[in-house]
Length: 387
Length: 213
Image 1 (tube, rainbow over the protein chains, first blue to last red):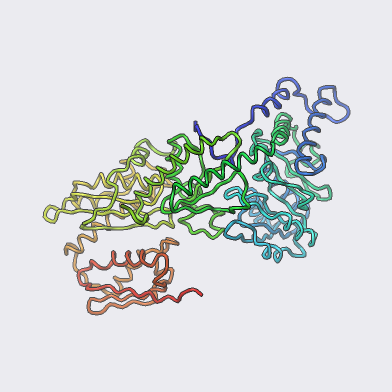
Image 2: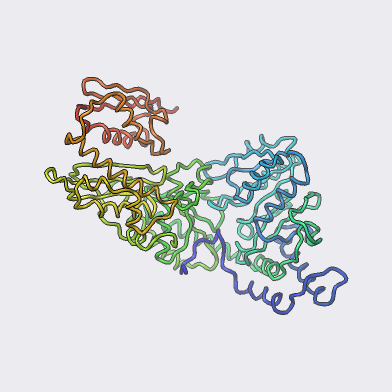
């Protein structure tokens, strides 16, 4: 087990208070929620489910009946995209970006093969921001959906959703946003941003795995992607994951502004220390409009899998965009889309923080990193000015 | 880390024979940072016995790149070049108690680097048949010079505008500016491939690319 966990953009530790909020629904209040004609336990469960739905809705300025609970962010993205395109019938046009998470891009690719969609991928700039002019030009009269994430999962860039929402509104095109990596970390208001569909996941904010939600504005018509009972506004069959949903609600409501400041300070400390102690580095992402918890750095002349393994041997968990670490031997498509050359993608490391990390951990990581980077650079034929 | 054998991890943590031999008798660079794999091997070879008396490596690469390079140096040291040439990539991988299939190319790279260093030494010592340096041969050599940005040969990238072989002088025109980030790296690679050929007196590289506006 890793002593120091700096991979919180992948998943987070369950907060013990969240576990406490979930526990009764597994041991005592385990009845299936039921609307009107159930016995007492099922009516109680329904009430708790509604409370959780309201809490999740409130966190994004939505109405409770706009929240559809799912098994996570991937299902929410699938329900939004597949649900809308299958309802639309025929071949539809969708606009998205080159750096969306795989559950958006691969869903579109699969539907493209089925002949249900033609999609345009808008490029991003060197900091990972969507090119707004290109996006504006890509929105056609027959475009049925625009899908742009809130925060990029690899580099943490926060997309200008207010502007994007306006562009979509002008054209009357619904905007879907994969908010999985921003929800609970950066401001997200579906009304202000004119978002019609949004995907959320609990496990990125110290909630349980296996639960998420799709926010859907009422006028947006979807087809379910699974069939069964009539749960979740007839869009998502199956018995509700009440413990998970209760945990998700607890996880989002317990986030305080101080948590975000604290996490942001950890990121700032790490970046400052790396800048002071290690030469030949680049920030991947935006210096001033990046998520508070994601720091992506390229270390020149060396490769990320080697850095990752050496950190792992010292008990530290982090992520890399190197091809050597990917199953397909492909470097991070996000970094390549941002115009980084392959070798800079290979040398990239992502450190992501949570409120459970400490400054002491950051300092220990820096100590290890300094040594590892120096050792690997001594080994590298590309390092200049070797003694 | 579960994918790697204990021996791979051991060589990754403590690579043997790291560095560059200053007065090397032969040197070879294989791969490119664009591919995420790059290896440089330098050798000292006893002229009489053909024994590899010293070998060192440098690597830009993942754990298996470092581990395969390390094991290859151990396998080759103290052997004659004729023995060392017969080391296969599978043998190198076996010596490490196996590599994940997706990492096998690292063993190929390590073996190739060793072979091309030896090949170079043999050419310089007239041990391989003296074939005259024809334009064909120059082109063949240049196909192994990669643009480190892309990992693709400078020939395929159409960076090679023109070349000429006359009276032992090879002239090469590249579509790169002298200020290009990798101009010196590419020219170093070309010299490494051609300078030692027995009938080549000089290699002239002209950077004739137009500067970007």
